[in-house]
Image (cartoon, rainbow, N blue to C red; front, side, top):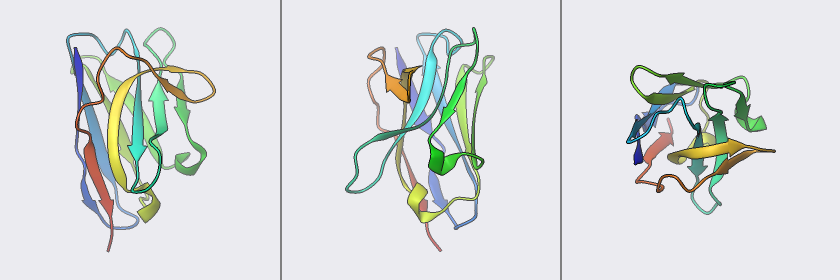
Length: 123
């Protein structure tokens, strides 16, 4: 039972990246999935999450609203994070995890963190 994040890389300010979170051992329809970011010198924070397919509620932290979009592809058992209008403050290692949506994305213990995927935003 695990989630594998991928899709990070180098983007120019104002550019876009799409991150993928592929699940194995369980269905992404059955659980909330969230993206977390760890920037240098900062605590890991929940950036965006989507609840299970029963209602597919979404959550975004204020700094990414209107720029990031979380979505799910049930056939591919994958959750995506489309990141547009990137700025240097969006940089960091992005991880995905199972979550519940409370006042923010709250990680559950179903899956380990994994290695994450590095996002760099620089000209």
